[in-house]
Length: 246
Image (tube, rainbow, N blue to C red; front, side):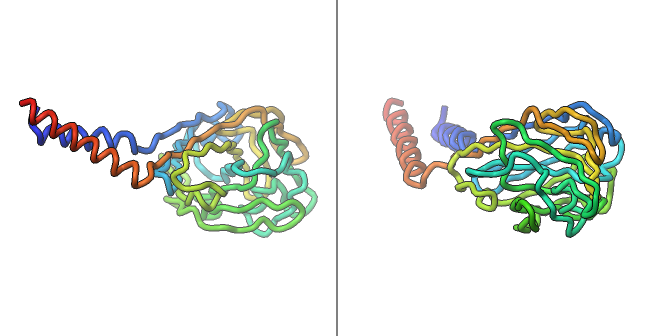
């Protein structure tokens, strides 16, 4: 093998070690709203700084809102019963509350206490955003999540992205967090469809759905520059020794 080929191989192996890992979570198989989420999937990946998600739609239109609850830091909530924010359609979806007398409560699974929510309403609200959850008040809007496309219910896939720092994670640290996605109208009427976890209970207002499982994602660990430098020096030393032997 020539020096050129060895160098190219070393670069490829180093790049492979730094490559982001994709994790795909299946829907729960329910189709109370036609199956776009229950028969679809969610794929997450990151580059050490930015988290990117892709929703692969199941059958029928993405007419409603996918709320992805995220547990990254200490504390969090055990139920949505105390969420009262109904300031707009996505906030109603996060709260499971229409602002009047109608509520569809979600009780979270043991070991899962979310701190944040990503709400994706590509057609119902033509927007996707990140909120910090607040009990008994307005959820704190943090940022757009760059949802695309919007204004359509029939795209095969929908993508979004946000910084790891915005959900309380340290970039490049290789940390894990838990997530669960629930499908719900922008008036707070909850479907039986979910992704990255499972649930039990009847859909609709006046009912309580209990989450029984959730997904876990581990972010990419990015080596410190000093470690990359050591790897480069080691690689060059190996190439030098191989050339001398030849």
